Every structure is written in structure tokens, then in C-alpha cells.
Image (cartoon, helix red, strand yellow):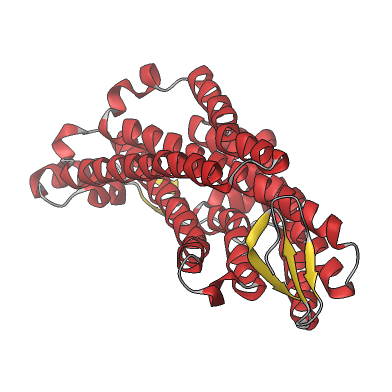
Length: 350
């Protein structure tokens, strides 16, 4: 028995729960241990997500070396991940606990509604931030001479605000239509429209990073003769790789739930709570992996966060600045020899 748009039902014959806000999804109440295990795992992930993203935000606010233009966007992105740990994950935990204890199924349905609306909102905000970050990296690599003119602090803050506001467009109407019991065909049509917007964002991200890759590959050392400029370009390229990895992690984390949702229209086995909870948990882990990626890729983040928690930072390693020239290209040995003949300056390795 499937629920109508205004009903929440429990099929006592096979201990199955149906929510009116997700009529195609069934929850098997007899498999209660699964919900307890996934709730404990999500609780650990939630606490870790909150702690790590809070440390990232505080580190950017307190450390001057992290208060540059790319990190303004990373700080705003960390806020989205922090909100996932504060809202989406606790909602999922509460649903699991209620189903495990078989308590207040009407409230479970309301919690599922809240989770369904917060999830797309934060996903959209994350994707929009990553699109802006990809554009910023494109300008930093391809138009580096005019970077300070094109990319300003005020412009990035305005773009970050626009990313948050535009993320409300798919989630707020979806919430209102679900509450008002609008025909599911209208809901599907609305989400289909926004799936094209999300696809356009992914295409733009791919385009910008392709331009970044070509810009790094085609750079010649005779175009930039100063070692400081080469070192700066090396750092910009490393940030571009990091943000590219953030995008890849986002896509991979949302791929399972997208595939399961698509297959659920054909095979009923994919409309069960087990398939949904595993893929939804994998999606939420994106917000935990992002700060770990900052930690792994950026030494400055590692040092700043270690200092915040009262630990000693690891000793810095030094290498000749001329390595930056070799990082860009090896196509012009004569130019590299000219750089090698200059006094070697030791700089911290990022």
C-alpha cells in the first residue's frame, strides 16, 4: 500500500513504513539494527565534519597568510560543509533513531521532508561555489597579469552571496510544493529544470579547469623571467589542483544517490531504505572529505590548524626557488640556465 500525498502509513503485514513526502521510498522496520549502526556512523561523521570545518573557517579568519582571495571562497564553501554537519547529518541520525525505536512515524516523515529540502539547498550552494572557484582559478592562470583587476575582494564576496541566494531557488519551491501536496509531476518538472542548471555548472567547471590545464602546460619560462613570479604561479597551480579535486569529490559523492534514484524508477529494490541510507550517507561524507583535502594539499592549513589545537607544527622543508622554474616547463634549457646562474634563494616548500 502506497501513501497518498496527504498520508503517512505503516503496512503492519510486512513492517514497512511509507512517508507521504517520499511516496516511492519504503522503510523496512524489521531491519532495525541497520538504522542503529548507520546512526552511530553518521554521528561520528557529523562531529568530525563540524570540528574540521570550524577549524578551517577559524584558521582563515585568524591567519593572515590564509586571508587571500581564493581562501575567501574556500571559507564560504566550508560554511556549507559546516551546515551539513549541523543540519543534514543530525536530521538523518534522528530519523534512524526514531525508526530503530519505532517512535512517532509522523515526525519521522517531517524530518525526512526537512532533510530532503536542506540537502538540495546545500548541494546547490556547494556546486555554485565550486563553479565560482573554477572561474577564479581560470583567471589566475590564464589572465594572471590582469588578475587583480578582474578578481577583487568585493566581487568575490558578491559572487559568494549570489551562490547562497541562487541555491534557494530549487529547494524553497520544492519544500512548498511538498507541503501543499502539489502533483508529483510538477515537482519532477521543477527538479528537471534545475538538473539542467546543475549540469551547466558542471560543464562550466570542466571548461574552466581545461583552460587552467592548458594554461599551465603551455606556459614558457621566457614569458615569466622572475623567480618570484614562477613561485607564485606554482602556488596558483597547486590551488587549482586542490579545487579541482574538491569538484571531483563532490561529483563522486553524489553519483551513487543519483544512480540509485534513477534506477529506482525501474527497479523497486532500489527504493528501499538500505539503498537510500547508504547513498545518502556517502553524499554527506563529501562535507567531511573537503577539510581533509585542505589539510592534505595545503601546508599552511596544516600549520594553522595544528596551532589552533595547541600542537607544534612540523618543521619546514626548504628547496631552491629554481625548482619553481622547472615546475613550469623544461622546454627552454637556455632560459633555465640563466635562472640557475642567479643566486639561489631558499623558500619554504608549500
